[in-house]
Length: 489
Image (tube, rainbow, N blue to C red; front, side):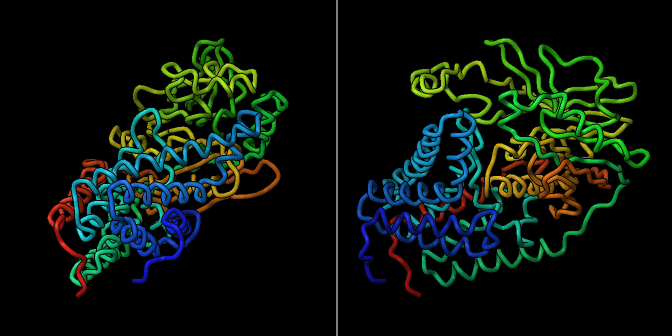
C-alpha cells in the first residue's frame, strides 16, 4: 500500500471521521469493521510507540468531535455561557488520551504490526469497558451500538453491548492483519451471530396498558424559572386525563418537583403511575433526581434515585479535589457549580405498583447497562425510563434512544419511555420500536401495551464477562504475534 502524502495526524483524523460515520444515528454500522480496520492497520505500522499512540489519539479525537458534535451546544446552553462549549473539546481530547495510553502500552509490548492490530483491538475493547466506570464515565461512543440496525445486535443478551463491540473489533483486526484464515474465521463468527439474531423471537407475557407523554417544554426555560412547574403540571394533567381503564400514567424526568423532600402524597399527579421527580435543596446540600411510584389516593409508594447524574450537567467530576479546573467557568457565569450537584443512588430497586415490579431509571441512566441489569436481576418485569432530551440537540436525541433500545435487548424486557423533547413510546424485548412519538410542537399522549416478562438472560447473569473474555482473546492473539510480520496470504 503506498504511503499517504498527508501528514499522519491528518490521515488519522480522516480515519476517525470514517469510523464516526458508521456510528449512531447513521444506519451504516455494518461498515464499522472496515473503517476500524483501516485505523488499526495505519496505527500499527507507525515506527515508534509514541507515533502509534499519536495516530490513535488523533483518530479518536476526530471520531468524538463528529459523533458528539452536539455536545458543544449542550455545554454552552447549560452554563448559559457560549464559550463553555469549548469544554467539549477537552472531553474529546481526554477520551483520545485514554485510547492513546492504551496504544502506547500495546506498542511497547508488541513489536510487530501483525501483533499490534490484534492487541490494539483487544485494548480498544478494554478501554470501552473502563469508560463505563469512575467519575469521568462517559460511554457514549461505544462501537457495539453501530450494530443496532442489524440482527447482530441480538448477541447483547449474551454479553451486552460490549460483546457487539467485540464482533466489530475482531473482524476489524482480522481485516487489518490481511490474514485470509483470520478473516474466514471471524466471518464465520459473524454468520453465527447473524443466525442467532435472526432466530430470536419476542417474549410472551401479560400486557400492562400505560399512557406515556411526549412533552415539549423548553428545558433551559424551565431550569431558569421562565416556565413554572404549575404550567407544566396543568398541561400534563390534560394530556393524561382521558386514558383507558387500568392504564398507568408515566410522566417524564422531573415532571414533578418539590423543595425539601419527597412528600407522602402527590395529589396533582393523576395516578396510579410513575413520574420523574426533582427535589431542590438549599446549597450546599445535594438535590435529588428520581422516579416516584404513585398509587391510589395519590400516595407515594416508592422512590428510585437517578444512579448516574450527567457529568458537567448534574455534577462536576473531581470538583472538590480540583476546584481550580472549574474556576474560570464559575467566574464567567457567576455561579457556584457545587450548588447544582445531584445526589446519586447507592443502589437501585424496582418500584412496585399493584403487584407489578417496574425497573425505573432516569434519563442518562439508560447509557449504563448495569442499571437495567441490576433492576431485572431484582425482579423488574418492565423497564420504565422517564427522560428529558430537551438538553440535547441533533444526533444526541437519536443516540440516546438507540442506546436505550439495547438495554431492552440485554435484559429481554420491554422498555417504556416518557420524555420531554425526545422519543416517547414502547420498545419490545428485541429492541424494536413498537409505538413511538418522535416529533411535534404540542404535548402528546400515547397509549401503549407493553408486556410484562420474567427470566434472566445470560447477560443478566454474567454481565460483561463474555465480552471481556473476547477482548482477552484478542490481546492474546496480539501477544502471540508480537514478533510476526503482516501475513500476505
